[in-house]
Structure formats: structure tokens, C-alpha cells
Length: 281
Image (cartoon, helix red, strand yellow):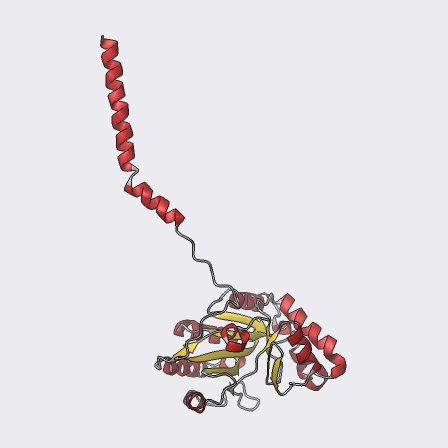
């Protein structure tokens, strides 16, 4: 009889423990299960199209010739502080040494804020543009872009031609090199070529901007109002990393962005979201 009572009591205890465990695993366990079932947000892939808002004014900041520290470092820091997007058209033979390699890596890995794009490996055979774009040099120039794409691990087929303002996409070619054999070859291979609408230029041989921040803002607003950009409601601005080496010019870049941000119509985007760059081959 005592044995039967012990078994009965043991059974009750087991049921109680099981019930308690079931209660304890209720909401908490359900929450854990729900959390584990939630999809993990994937990092955007360069080149993924976005929806264009026709009520907005899209500004594409495209900076050439990186890596060029300290200019590249300063520009990245300003863009990060202001929370805006920008594109760096990079040159392979400028990537010398571990620091510059890390700088390029940081741009490539910085998407969606930063986009790494192709500006040729040799910068047009070291600025020898006539030779670079000569009909007999088409294969060599093409291989220069392909080498840059491979060595810098450039994630998009978007190119800026060294020293030339040309747009090309899906057979629609316009600009300085509209009849170039190289441009036609790149276009046939699915590459998109982007020029620029406005340049924040260099002051002679000095590594500093030619125009003030206020002057550039005036020119941007005027171009939007005139509707004279290559694409409606979109302006591509060209500049160079090296122009912002000194603090005073980095501050000017920061002022430039800060003022443009005050107009809620302005949206800063990477060049893979430029209208013609989003069209699939």
C-alpha cells in the first residue's frame, strides 16, 4: 500500500513538473520561435534597381581617381557624417600599398552608401587620351577596363571614360566619343558609361576646387530649373577626391551637402540608380 502511494505521488509530481515546464515554455518559447522565423534583412546588392520618385530631384555625386588619400578619406568622412550616398570611380594603378587597398575595400564594402565603379586601370594610358581612344587601340583600352574591374573587384559594369564626357546605355550613345569603337564595344558587352552634367573643377594645377560651395549650389538649382541635364530630375556631378585634401575644402564640401539637404526634394543616390544605369541589357 505504501508503495502504491509512493507511485501515485511520483506520478502527480511528474505531471506537475511537466505542466510547469509547459507553462514556462509558453510565451517565451513562442517568441524565440517567432524571432528565429523572422527573415534576416539582406544587404542590398549593387545594381539593384530602385523606384524613381518623379517629385524628387536626384543628385549623383561621382568622385574620380580614387584612391587618393587624404582626399578620399576626407570625402568619405564628409559623406558619412552627412549621411548621403556617393560613387567613387577608381583607378587601379593608384591602388599602391596596403593602406590604399584597404581604402578601396572600404568603398566596395560600404554599399549602399558608397559604390565602387570603373575609371580604367591606367587612367587612359596615364592621360594619353588620344592614344587610348585611337581605333587601333580598342582592344588594349578594353583590356585596361577589364583589368581594373578584376583587380579592384568592381561589383557593377559601370564605367566613366578618363578625360571624356560620354553617356552610353543599351545602344543609346551620346557625348564626346559617341562614334568611338571602344565605346561601342563596351556598350555591346553590356557596360554602361556615364558622363556628367556639372563638374566641380580643379583650380589650375592646385589641388583645390575651382568653384565655391555656394556657386555649385546655384549651378545645380539652375540646371534643375532649366531642365537641361542629361536625364529629367537627375544631375550627375563630377569632382575628384584630391580637391578636398585640405580641411577648408573638406569643410566646403560639408557645407555644400548640408545646404542641398535642406531642400527636401533633393535625394542623393549612387550612380547604379541613375535612370539609364537601371535599364537592363
